[in-house]
Structure formats: C-alpha cells, structure tokens
Length: 366
Image (cartoon, rainbow, N blue to C red; front, side):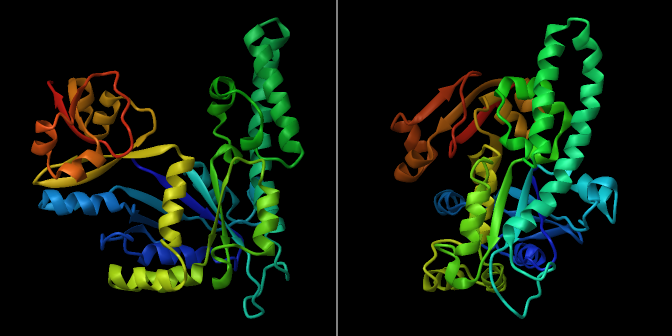
C-alpha cells in the first residue's frame, strides 16, 4: 500500500537538509536504492533487519523492501489558509499525505539566521498550526451550515452531528488541533472523517537538534514536548546535519561505526520511518521464496484476505487460505520445509488477523 508523508516547516529550520538526507540515504540495513519521482518527491526504502536475515536463509534472486514516499512541502506563508503565497498548493499537498512530518528548529547557531530572529520552536509550530486550523475551521463551518437545517427539524442523528461539529469548531477557535479533540472513534468516523481535516492527520514533530542533543534533547525540545503533550503525536530528536553525513557513506558498516561513535543504535532516518509506521498503525508481513523475498505494508488488524489483496486484488477475491509461519520460527528453524516438519506452519482462514512479521503464502482460486 502506498504511504506518503509530507515534510513541513518554516525556512531555516533544517527541513530541506533533512529531505536531502532522505533523498541521498541508503536504507540503513542494506544498500537499497532511493528514487526521485519529482524534484520534491522521493521514495525511500523502509529499513528492516528482518529482510536481511530472510535473505541469508532463502538466498532469493532479489529482495524487495517496502517503501515510503516523502514529499518536501514548501511555500507556507502567513495567510496560506486564505490563498496567500503558495497557500492553496501548500494546503493541497498536505491534504494528499497520510502523515505530517513537522520539522522544528531546536538548535542555536548564530550562523544560521532564524526567519523571526530568534529560536522558538513552539512559536514556529504555532505559525503553521494556525494556517491549518483556519483552513479546518472553514471546512467545519461549511458542514455546520449543511446539517443545521436537518437538526432543527428533529433529525436526532444530525442533532448529534451538529453538537460534535460545534464542539470541534470551539476547539479549533482556541488554537487547538483537531487530533486532540475528544470524540469516540465511531463518531469521528461518522461525523468528522469526510471533511479530511488537516490538523486531524497524524503528526511527527522532528526536533532538529545539534549533535550533543540527539539522545537527551535540550531546553528547546523540552518546550516542544510540553506544547504537544495532549496531541497524541510522536516526537523525535534528529540532527539533520548528522543525517547528511550518514547519507553519503557508501557502506552499511561505515554507517554503523559512525552511529556507534555518537552513541546511537540507528539513524534518525530509520527512526523517522519507524515512527511514521507507528502513528499510521502499520505493520509488515513477508513473502519468501527463491525468486523473491518481499516486505508488504498493511494496516494493523487486517484480515488475511485483505492482506492478500495488497499483493493483487485477485488474491483477495479468490482467497482460500493462508499458510503462515512466524518470523521467529522461520529464523530458528532455517527454512519453510523445516517449519512444516516441526508443525510451525499454520493454515489460516478468512478470519485470521495478520501479525507483524508473519511470513505468508496465499492459496487462491479465481
């Protein structure tokens, strides 16, 4: 399934540096390629050590990792919600993404001028938030106008819808994002989802820090953490400068040595992609054969037929059963045949919920 995350941020916060690092990066577990679709859109492979271990055992002709599409969204100015500058393009680009990667400057450097003259990541966040909230407010107000009439004539469903919309409107008017609005999942799906609100999208706040702050952060990251504590968002401390250095290293071994010298287990790029998976509630399953070992991205909780449909729609339509091996069992026993002999290959039907790391073979008939 295609996954797209948009990078946003004010000028000189490190947004372009991070995007360029992603653009030049090798996957952290192996040298899989990066490709550029457009000047500001790139596809990067998702680092997954499990693919490497499967490759060692299966020895396939090729290995195909899953990917994430990264979009460098530019053009925000105050007034974007009203179409100022590249406002309409900026907001349209965000609307098409699955998640937002919001880069905030959390480092002091007199050689890098801040657009507002001082480093204040919380203020920077509020500038972009305000434009997105204003656009969402416009969407909510338009829907309120549509449901008010039905609510007034006694439609109880529309009365509940109106009640929720008025609460959401007040929430946005307080300068709060829709993702922090308290509503049940069912009512959100029923009354809010169709507006595709920008501030409802899951967000990762990437605090661009100096080298010494990558692990524990600093006063700026502490301010960000306090500001977003009620947003159900993820926060990462990443040094775009470090990522730029890692991106140009040719070998996996060199990258690992560099990270170890900094006291890091993995790169910011790897952590960013993993964080994107978490906030979008995604997991990975694998297909493994002599021709190909491949990773497939699905939504957590998907049933076996739906997971099969990610490979091809015919697999879902004609689904008969799935043969499933746990990743841990495959690695311990070394092959599909050994897992079958040991009773570690399970035959699952249409009600099976696919788990992260499952190695699957689908039987279908069209």
